[in-house]
Amino acid sequence: MSARPEPADQPAVVVGDALVDLTPARTADGAAAFQPRPGGSCRNVAAGLGRLRVPTALLARISDGHFGDLLRAHLAASGTRLTHALPAVRPHHSRHRASARGPVGRLLLPRERHRRPRPAP
Image (tube, rainbow, N blue to C red; front, side, top):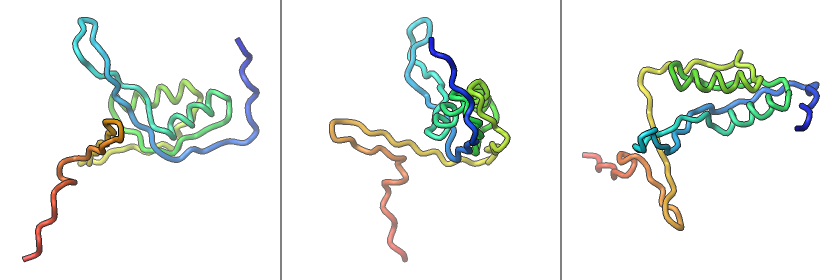
């Protein structure tokens, strides 16, 4: 096993997303389920820098509740500081999903994005 790298002299602040990916999984009895996993490209960068012992802080919105707790625990374990993390406490959220399927990829967006605008009266 290799030794941990020496701490870096310059701190890093990573700004961007911290989210939870829901990956397909199976329960103990074989039923289909989803496994929550820490995700987001900026969260990945911050956690990686923290594991390399670079003094790192993440500036991102992190939700309250189970998923936010999962993200905070994962980031803390990597040595990433969350002093600049902002609470994501909006009562109404807009969710969007994009998925590429097929050999050339077909973008799937929420149904309301596909509706044609009505002409003005």
